[in-house]
Image (cartoon, rainbow, N blue to C red; front, side, top):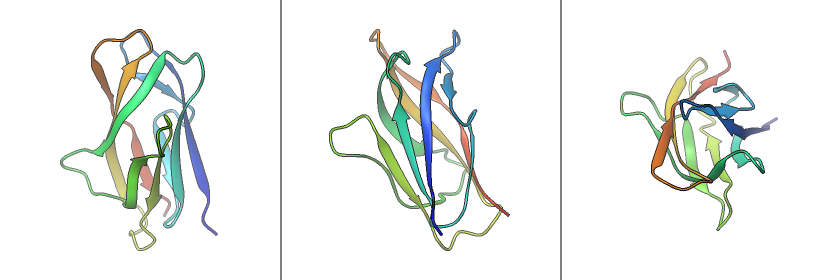
Length: 112
């Protein structure tokens, strides 16, 4: 049965890397849903994009896309993706204090 994996952005480290609830490595099954949520007072204003790294495979059949006008993003893992596949991706985000777009690079791995 497909599950939802909520990745919460909890804060920002001094080097501008993100503090994520999954520590930057999410394990999912084919067909699962992944959501990215910004916790209040995290120091993050908005996610401006979620993109796979150039050399990586895409594990999603849909998204990741912004949910309406919210700060939440969602993607659906391809139900036919081979087990053990891994996607390295970038979260593009802006700080609550303003300024430039920052990039953080976590991973999503399909359970074996």
